[in-house]
Image 1 (spheres, one colour):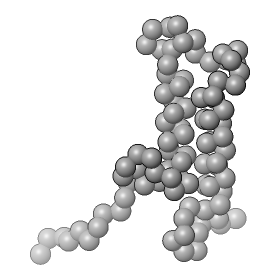
Image 2: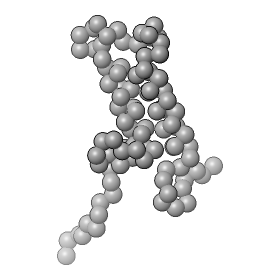
Image 3: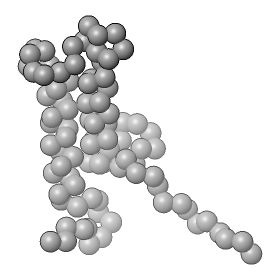
Image 4: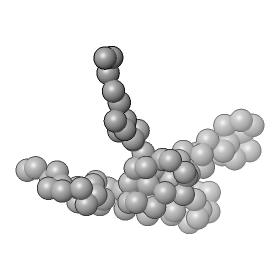
Length: 90
């Protein structure tokens, strides 16, 4: 099954669905729905306590970029932009 887009309208459907799932999971984790009961890194450990929040914040930012919502300038879908008109040696 080839789910690559036929034109430049955006990422394939499977990528958008996966990004949407990532947004939902990251938001649910950052909202602390489990009240700290779910197996997470305890926040009282110095230096390590906030690593899980950092991970899920990064996941949220990247997934939003995949969906076209760029809250970090120049992220553009979490991949480097194609070079513009690079001329080789003459």
